[in-house]
Amino acid sequence: MSIRDEVIVQFKQVAKEQGKRLAPLEDGLPLLESGLDSLCFAIVVARLEDVLGVDPFSAAAAEEAPFPVTLGDFVRFYDNAAK
Image (cartoon, rainbow, N blue to C red; front, top):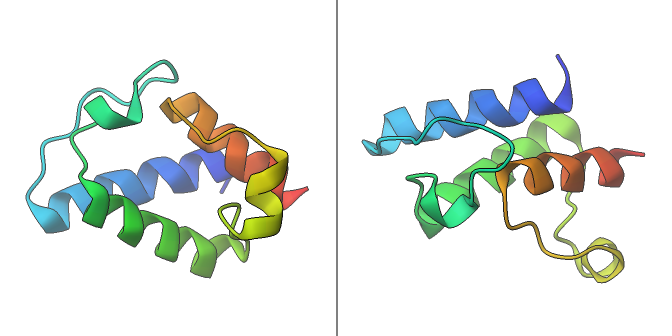
């Protein structure tokens, strides 16, 4: 499964578990308008670290890249950290 696919799976799973309604998941979607709250994002990030073995939000990695604003940014953030 690609990083993009895993991100989408986690967004959908966490939204379902937390009773959130997701906006259509497109690259240009601002994360703040996705339907997920900060707890949801914390769960998504923790699960992605478990599945992908990478944490792009760690201090060293985060200094090298701008903070993701859109879903596309979020996926690229993980893609770049996995390289």
